[in-house]
Length: 209
Image 1 (cartoon, one colour):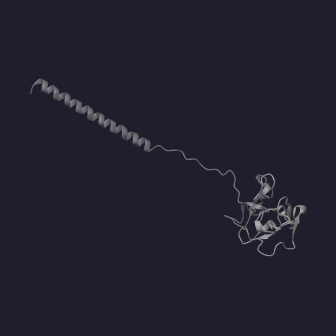
Image 2 (cartoon, one colour):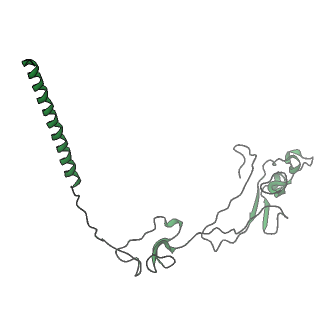
């Protein structure tokens, strides 16, 4: 073997040894890092009870504040109740103190029977323009077969001396001013809502409901 070949072989052997040593050192460092990471501990935090409430005693106690942010819709406050409980006999309920508004129908009318009955009053406030008053009709209706029309009883003033009934032409009379009144006892209630369905064929700037 020549000297140059021997030198090349020795150089190659040294390079292989250095590479092997580098790989071994790298693996050793990785193993040490893994071992170090796996043995690191994170400190644990303890718990402390700030306050506790089981609603078994007087409630709300002085350290509680209860309020009603919408008192216009009724008086409602938190208080303790024995209706439902957990781990004792009492719990807290947001509506234990308060009242409720219940819907109650005082009066309803569908115009399906005799109309107007004795508890109604129909009035024509402008008789010189012709007699026009409320009565029931089957010409238009909602949820049944009948409704009430402010000109059902009356004649067309412009048609005089010919007698033309309002219900024949399904038209209001000119200058008519007619009311329908019904008394209802609401003394037991703090407020009431009156709702109705209506259809109107009005003249802009002249008619109103």
